[in-house]
Length: 117
Length: 111
Image (tube, rainbow over the protein chains, first blue to last red):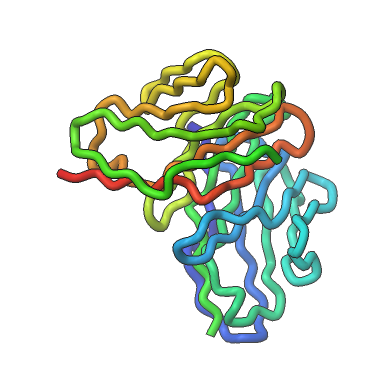
């Protein structure tokens, strides 16, 4: 199956700093990538959808100025958590779709665990 | 988005079949039924999907009710590695095609 990687796998940062998380599709081109957040013992919550070369579409309640998404190429999307605070500590997961075909599955990355002190 | 309902948790024994139910009474004709699973501290993994007919792959089988208002994911012979949270998700053919995760079913496999 298709492989999606994330970097870093875990990061610890101080409150007020910015953190960038990379999501890469390793063996396919991803026209669309998705970013999710998951708090302990909870389900995944979709944050935003990004299409290569265009602005991301954010879900209701997600601050676009705080969670900056860039999908500059068909194999790379980045999520930057700006001015991170302890409440932003979470498990961030990306996924990628290979084509526009309606049955195509989403391939998920292994996740990035963010801890803000 | 049409909603799905799954039991919070289920338990089974190793090497026995497992039937994971999902209700989706408000499903529309353009909704595919997708199943993903998430092992601890990992990203979700695709399991199977279908539209109207039953589906089989190397991981599982998907049985879809004739009225499409419910479906069942079948693991034919559970192993300890199948312990995970299983999510049943409806996905539109058209539009944003995003996946909206519910709470899923936490499957425990006893040795």
